[in-house]
Length: 122
Image (cartoon, rainbow, N blue to C red; front, side):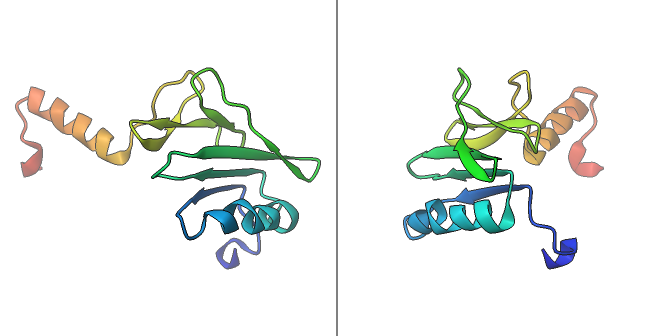
């Protein structure tokens, strides 16, 4: 916040752990709702795959309802969040998986190889 002129975040994603889950789901959720007024709050447990999201409506967090694919919409990001192969990932409005930087680099390297260019020499 100090680097953003006191502006609170518009989106928070908590990665839960056994030692922090209760605090993240209770105390922090209340702080983000009542003090930060963060519009979008999500949590994800990478071990149990528990996943939930909330949007601030009239100063109260309302739970987000998953779409048929089980994904939750972030109004602030303009993207869905959902679990894919055990990982929390972003999806576009038409349900396409948003590639990670690593996936994008791998795709680019494969294309360069198709063109007989060794990406390791660039």
